[in-house]
Image (cartoon, rainbow, N blue to C red; front, top):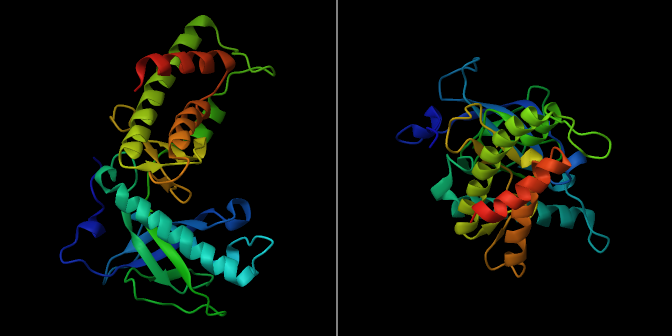
Length: 272
């Protein structure tokens, strides 16, 4: 279990300031949210290099996509609220494994985003508001920042297949790579099972949603992030989604045809 950040351990709880630092994902490529790395500044403090970091997920109505039979404004408002409330609900369902298989969740905050060149958002009081030029209301989810590399980046650095997808490693290198992948797939599938056991299915697993923790010795060295599209156990395709989640975890680790085939056989025989 990772320790809580200092700001989340303060008693009694206090309002803090969140200052956006760097955009990690924009809605042009993702279609639902802006995702920012941010710094947390306690009352009476100033930002320093040691200021604790969090991830801020901003769902803004004007950034949401409308369907053909919806008005742009109405669809965006409904979608932003729906996505925000769904992810908040999912994080509450996953509370027992926050700080291990999934990030800590620091709440959903309803605010008016402040679009400034120096983007100080607001304090984390749910009733705080900052006004944009348009007066638009947005939803902000704050979660733990997980140190590490996502699986997509790791796979790109360790790719070893030719144009036909076959391994370019010799037998010794192939075995070494297999042992690394076997351990990481096992950890990822156990984290996924912990999510399923709490009545949640992921529905859209990809390598960028798996963060490899810097310490490969840590039992829960892979953290699953981004629960915007998750569904709960009363979803009509729940059982199908459970199976698909497992398949997508294995597929996310694919680095060559040989390792992928071995992973499929090994998980069928060894993983619940």
